[in-house]
Length: 401
Ligand SMILES: Cc1ncc(COP(=O)(O)O)c(C=O)c1O
Image 1 (cartoon, rainbow, N blue to C red):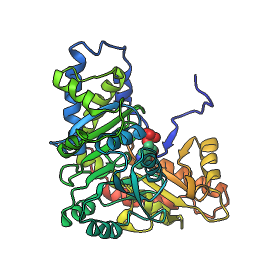
Image 2: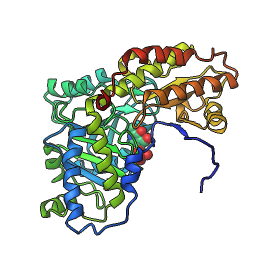
Image 3: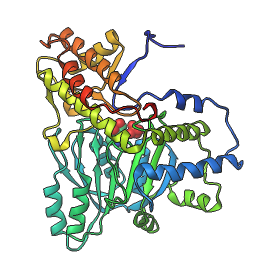
Image 4: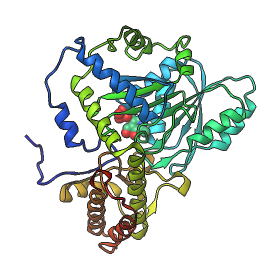
């Protein structure tokens, strides 16, 4: 039964959880199975191999953990670091803030590099800290690739370059929760030591699987890292990997089959095409925002996010009212402004299982809501700007040519 039923499909435009493809829902509609039978390890083997393609790694070791993004953070930190270790962490919005809070509660010595919300990580500050750290006291750099609260994407290749320029051995830990499988992400090429995501974001699965990938250097660090860990200990997984049975504890059978179907869809579209599609969705959204005469929370083009756009509303309008009305009147779910930007921005999530015409529906909805709350928008202006761009840029669907 539906609570608060509304006809038609909900326009789910929060930046995760996102709509699940019908193919994935069907694949998950199945009974439980004995995970110790030969079938589940055989399936798992394919998942572990294929998830590496999404992270663009050949040397990384993936872990499919029954958890959310927050648990994946904890897995990355506790397996590689010891209490008291100095780490650099960039605070640029609500999710980087929450990760820093976790790092502090785990008793690391967190050197916080803060930016105004809407700006990216201050890499010039990183450069000076690396230059000064000739004794190599910095054990890790922690960075959120795409800050979902503000729609800011950090440049990871620049972080790698700085580490290389200063020949600094710090581990490079990356939250890719709202980027991996939507925004260009190259674990091996960028020398990332631990990368992580959650199933409910661009992979378009239900919540409940944290996906963590560790480089050989991170695995080596895990042998001496002293943080207390039990449920998240990579050692337990590796033991079962070596036995060929894969699971130290009970996996969700349904999520495993769901992940298989999700990966199949991504490979059928082509990972690069998936990333291109997100580029189009991001660009079209930003063009609409511009046409409405509103400002993007993201302060510079170099940080524009292709998975989420945070839109600043005029000061006399409360953005939470926009989100409430979207849902109440138009069956459209938009993201709230969080913490420092609560009431000031609303967010359009454009990631995962989504196409351009769906986005245009969302943009049309936003225009009506803006008018509802007294903002003088010309109906159709954002849709026109977005569709003019899309009409010139949407490629033919490869399987239908
Ligand atoms: C960038 C980022 N990191 C971490 C998280 C936390 O993930 P979860 O809510 O799955 O624990 C989120 C959630 O939206 C996120 O956007």
